[in-house]
Image (cartoon, rainbow, N blue to C red; front, side, top):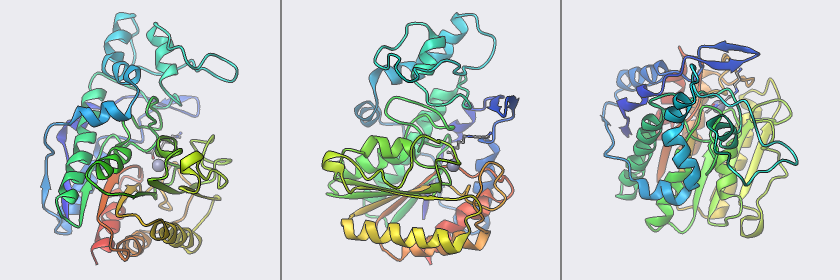
Length: 342
Ligand code: Q9C
Ligand code: ZN
């Protein structure tokens, strides 16, 4: 399996994450990908290449122009405002406030264009997010050209990002870009399966009204887990998208017996949908010792999950998402790929 990876990810390395009322070193840190790269090489997955330049056209098609403009200029505007720290949102358009009027001031704009305040934006964030999207695009092009599968080692991750909001460590929705590219390249129906511990709210939101892209997500129940305000089982799509969204929220302490049942159900739905290509949002934060999650999957479970995904035989692009148990993120992520290849 070919791996697409850009060193440009390093340009996103915020010092601060707001967590429990304190600033901590971000869980989503550059060293995560070193562990994944190390494990890939250890297991003989050595075909690792840098993507070509990002293709902006599909990003402009997918995202709100004001949002892209914000991402590109936020750091400069923040500094011009005289703020000393990293770009962090503190003001949000909450219930019964204006949600269609982006403020002029960057302190307002950052809240307008985000869904949470844990994620800081820095000088190199835009370049890093574009390089992450470029890896996803290159992986998709590789599979569209006939390869059975590819792994986009994306950082920063993408599945929480909507067309007009960042948050949950995500800026551009890489998995959504891949799904759209498969459609553009001729796949009539595409499925996205999100196995990250957190609900893929951004991906769901982007495709919620569409019948051509099926979205399934296995995640911590919204009553108990970020992003809290989406991911319930009764969210099944709307209009043409009715029936093309499937959520599998699960409770704290969920282990592989229950989780794998949800995985099989989701895969059966994807098969029944008639997907011609598959995108996996590959987070491994369902791991038992993940510092910010509450499922109980163990390392071999990721191997088995990969096997179950691979047994469907669909052309597949994996996009890296979360996974914060730093010592195991490489093993768990590569286990899914190895299981898939079995
Ligand atoms: N105090 C992804 O896995 N909440 N994003 C963190 C820590 C946000 C996770 C709570 C979690 C975002 C891609
Ligand atoms: Zn996650």
